[in-house]
Image 1 (spheres, rainbow, N blue to C red):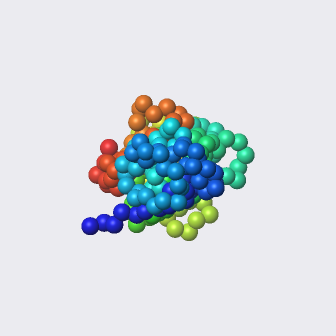
Image 2 (cartoon, helix red, strand yellow):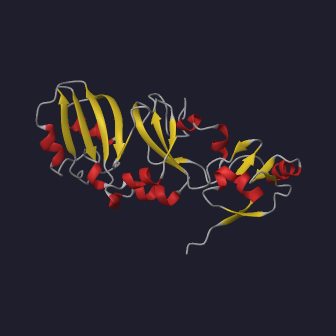
Image 3 (spheres, rainbow, N blue to C red):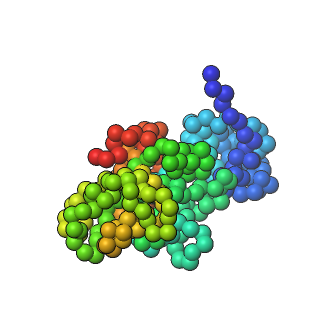
Amino acid sequence: MTKVPTSRLDKLLANLGYASRREIQMLAKNGHIHLDGVPVLKADIRIALTPDLETRLVVDGEALDPLPGVALMVNKPLGVTCSHKEAGPLVYDLLPPRWRRRDPAISTVGRLDKETSGLLLMTDDGALLHRIISPKRHVAKRYRAGLARPMTGDEAALFASGTLMLEGEEKPLAPAKLEVLGPQEAMLEVHEGRYHQVRRMFAAAGNHVETLHRQSIGGLALPDDLEPGAIRRLGEADLAAIFDRGSGSG
């Protein structure tokens, strides 16, 4: 039987970004924290971190934020960066303000460059993050690319060959699958995450990517009803779909 982890209430809420431990102690003392409808007047109690705690614990009249181990999908808009080091809008700005203060922090699972839109995953679970990005997992990523010039017809064979070398690198790319959607539009499935990989692949084929949108990661696709900039929490079935190899090339 799996042992349920526990935490001091003040530590849990401080790590979720609500306030400092001292401030949380005052919230409790003043009757602003309720567990199962009953005021919790002392914030140093230990509580079990069961999934239903998010509905049982209420802070200032609102249900508890997601417990540690949260995973999110984001429809990343154009012009938003995944790096803290670049100027301009950040993908972290899309999170609710309190979620930006969490410890451990919510991080992006890999990155999409500023001019790439589409499916981006975020989590505070380091083990999950590394499982997704690990080369050993071979998690497929599918991108829809709009190109500056019509394709020549040789691209699919080149990308599938396993011999394509990107400029400045010494190891050839793993085979990638190209699906032609139109003269200047294609879907490309890759199993690696090299720097600007899709753009550099088309550059190696003598073309230029003008628009790039990530459609899916593994068997998890971006839903049509998730608007740019919107965030959705992932459930167990969603996380399992990421590692479903049979669904990544649909």
